[in-house]
Amino acid sequence: MSENVGRWLRDEIENSILSNEFSPGERLDETVLATRFGVSRTPVREALMQLDAIGLIEIRPRRGAIVIDPGPHRVYEMFEVMAELEGLAGSLAARRLDEASREAVTATHSRCEQSAAAGDSDAYYYDNEEFHKAIYAAGRSEFLEEQCLQLHRRLRPYRRLQLRVRNRLSTSFSEHCAIVDAIFAGDGDEARRLLRGHVGVQGERFSDLVASMAAR
Amino acid sequence: MSENVGRWLRDEIENSILSNEFSPGERLDETVLATRFGVSRTPVREALMQLDAIGLIEIRPRRGAIVIDPGPHRVYEMFEVMAELEGLAGSLAARRLDEASREAVTATHSRCEQSAAAGDSDAYYYDNEEFHKAIYAAGRSEFLEEQCLQLHRRLRPYRRLQLRVRNRLSTSFSEHCAIVDAIFAGDGDEARRLLRGHVGVQGERFSDLVASMAAR
DNA sequence: AACGCAATTCTTGTATACACGATTGTTGAC
DNA sequence: GTCAACAATCGTGTATACAAGAATTGCGTT
Image 1: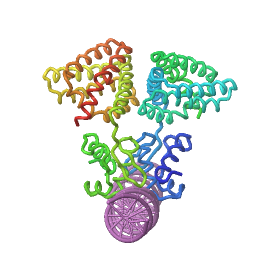
Image 2: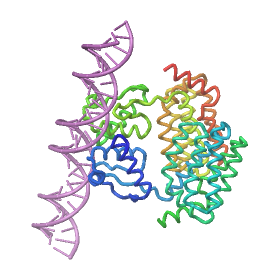
Image 3: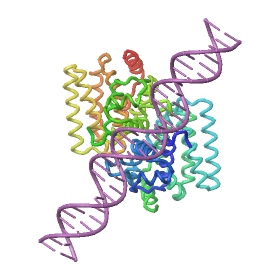
Image 4: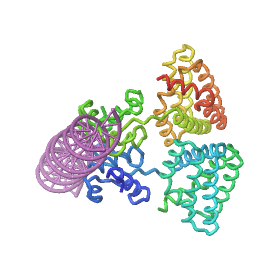
């Protein structure tokens, strides 16, 4: 537990939302949360305020907080922005790559290779996350990295769903290969283009997304 | 004043920070703010929590809140991300432009023309803002629009400073013209490219930025 | 039986009180 | 004279109390 209860509660409730423990549209009762976590309403309210500012919940004046339900279209829009940000990170990475970043990308990439070969979708989910984080870091822009990480967290549940689709694992990994090649070749434009395509949910990927969201 | 004090305080303090009334690095004393606004510490704390979540201030446990000082390099990174997001908005606008958006872009664009011709940098600052907002809206992606607006707010003070530089007014306006042409021609890639160049602070624009930040 | 109004109950919004940790100033020793 | 330790003070973190608005339920009327 973090040293102050408010911070801890924020993370706790955020995780509960992102892991779908609190479903979209659900009402978050301050008193219930307070007793559940064994604290008073004050830190609960502070946590809710922060989640509202981040955009995970909506606080309607005098009418309580509800978990925001993005809906397929909005999730698509979020992936669209994510693709753009990752594209930028990739293009910066290609230009600024240093030894440490190169090693981090290589390491996470080969871990992806292993879990993809093993067909282990849960392992790949985790390794894939680390691979993308390595690219964010390689871009060497702290602000961009923060933005990427924040949006990545929010899209986490949907990414997981997407990996379950068809032969997405091998497709995803071969895209990774091309991305790594472009970055290591210093080809920023190509890295940007490939990452946009890799992250975005164009075409049939969108219907897959909608289907998996409905199935939940 | 909004119907609940917390919300109102958040906006109030946010504006005070963005208008440089609270300088970067300055300590925000909860009690002082409370008495200043004539409320108790509770809503002040809630406002500060939200500003912390947005990234405008930093709350160090047991040690109070300070206004974040971005520093030239981080502001550059923020403009870099802003350029990317605006580029996406522009490319979407070119593809999805409808009649209402077209009129909004045309209207704000011609207001920019007038204030640029008049050499009125303050008027241009405002009209320019509306022009960019029209493009965000024309992209027809609510999430992207929100992200653009939020980042735009945070960069507001620096944009204002930049307009004071050299013959930036006419340069800016001629760039607008090319952007409008590309969007109206439905050329998404060109609109993206031009907007990236227009918003970013590459080359000498960066030194201008640093100089204006230092002068403040 | 259904609709509307009123009263009660429940929940949120704000204030205040209290406790704990951090910071600062003072005093004493080396 | 300088540094360190201790004490006092100040500010944050959490709990609780109180006020005000919203939702719900029950009763009365049509």
